[in-house]
Amino acid sequence: MTAKINVSKLGLFTVLPIAFVANVQAKNPQDSGLNISGVLNGYYQNSEKVLSEKAEGFGLGETELALSGAVDNAFYGKLTSVIESADGDTEFEIEEAFIQTQALPNGFSVRAGRFMSDIGYLNNQHLHTDAFVDRPAAYRAFLGSHYFDDGVRIDYIAPTDIYWAIGIEAFKGQKLQAEELKGEAKSVGAYTFYNKFGGDIGNSSSWQLGLSYLRNENGQAFAAEHHDDEADHDEHEDHHNDEHEGEHDHEEQAGHNHGASFTGKNLFSADVVYKWAPQGNYKYQHLTLSGEYFRLTDIFLAEEIEHQSELDKDHQAWYISGVYQFSPQWSTGVRYGRIDTYHLHEEVLESASLKETELQLSYHHSHFSTIRLQYTHQDGTEMFLPTNENSITLQFIMTLGAHSAHQF
Image 1 (tube, one colour):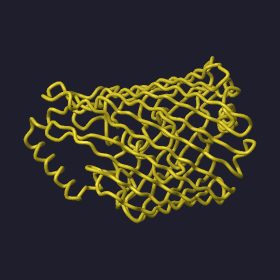
Image 2 (image 1 turned 45 degrees about the vertical axis):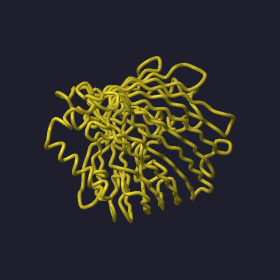
Image 3 (image 1 turned 180 degrees about the vertical axis):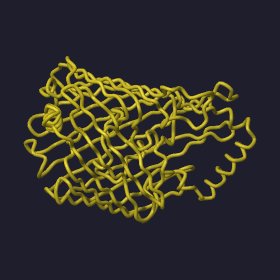
Image 4 (image 1 turned 135 degrees about the vertical axis):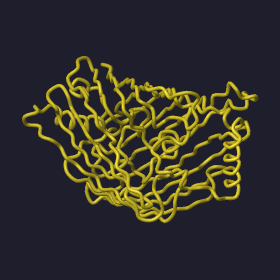
């Protein structure tokens, strides 16, 4: 990250966190030390939700332990481990283990190792920074909640009057791999390209617009196997019947599987964010409005299917949200989202949709502690049954130790 070079081009809300990070990164290794931080994330939820990783009852959300610091004056490094527990299962995972250059010229930077992709608006942010207990359904369906993987990234921040960041990434892509591939998976399976633009509007407002593309070389399912393999057909038929009998398997949808639930060859997305705080002082009062749209295309390899034209459908998803902090210790928010997908049944694509409405009220004793109460209503069809599900979640998020500031 070359924040020193480009900080004059960044928006109000972007300058503050990057300045903090730059201050950490600019230190010599002899005096920078090692930053150690932890995030405690616990919850109680009265019922399961479709596509959610949180189970009914008490559970441990994504709880982090992170180490970070300057390696020397050329490299920065970070290691983030995650523990998550729900429904009797405890998982441990390395979410981040990367190095990043901090001295390349002309606005370039390179990151390598395991890290979160910079596509979309929310994906590059840790889950505990969200204003709601779960990522939007669009992320849970298409990106496994948040997409992190092993790979490399090249970033460039242009010397323009507005903030303009361009990046390309290459990943292993295993988390986005289709369940039924034709042939072996490619070792480098996912490539991304993104643009982010941003700026200030007066002294109190900032905005950001992003456009992203992800090409998934292992994302297309081999649809022909559904009718060629009798066993698979029977299994699919049984599953279909279960759905119509209202016996949808929540465990499969929740799955505690950090991979994507729906895959395809091309994922296009657009995001827009607007933030407001009186005179840029977000401590006492601020408003954030955001929205994202995703379109996932080429979901099947249809070359051996008789009715190829019937398979030419796309998944799509979107959400809009508004979060208002009306006092230093209280905030509230509302979010509405929808996903529209297709699944194959006897060479015919059947549509399914899920609409999700969320309301939350949060108490912040300080910047490091949040207690959140959220109501969620889900209305699904077909594979997202049952319909009209209501759930209540009580969550706490506590941050310990030094923790770097977050993205815009």
